[in-house]
Length: 135
DNA sequence: GCCAACGTTGGC
DNA sequence: GCCAACGTTGGC
Image (cartoon, rainbow, N blue to C red; front, top):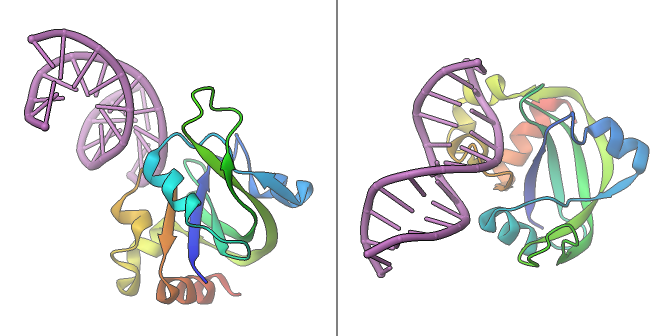
C-alpha cells in the first residue's frame, strides 16, 4: 500500500473543510508529476494532508476513495484527480520545521521538491511522521 | 529538439 | 512582499 502527501493552501481548501465534507475531489492539480502520482494511487492508499503557505504543517490523514479520473475543471482535459476522504487528524500537527530538523527525514520528497503538490512518502517516512504526530 | 522568457509555487 | 526553484511555452 503506497503512501502519499498532498498539499493544499488552507484558504483554498483546509483540513477542517475536508472533515466537514467527509470527502473531496482533489481537483486543480496542473502539474504532470503530481498528476502522475495521483494516477498511481489505489483505493485505500493513505495520504497526509499538508497545509502550505499558512501553517506549513501536516494536519491529518486521508484515504483514497476514488481512483484517478479526469478533472472536469481542466478545460484542456490533460489532468485528472482522485477523491480523498478524511481518516483522522494528527494529535499534534507536524511542522515543516520539525521535518527539516529530523535527520531521519532528510531526503523526503516534500523538502527535496518543495513545489510538487502531490508527492510520495516512503513507509519509513510515514512511520516517523505518524510517531511525531502522535498517531 | 533546444533554450530563453515567462509564470507559478511556496518558504521565508 | 520577495525571491529561488522549477515547470511550461513558444520561437527558432
